[in-house]
Length: 41
Image (cartoon, rainbow, N blue to C red; front, side, top):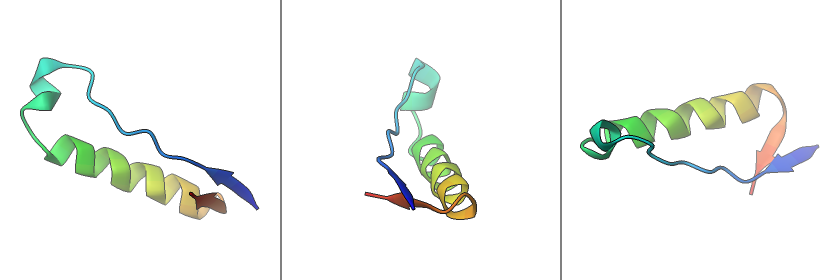
């Protein structure tokens, strides 16, 4: 099984204004890892 570390970040001032962008980014990253059998460290 492959493993990975997630790197969640904002890149614009608009994204900094809301925590939901980070939550969505993390959820999508975790989903990608789950369907591709990648263990998140």
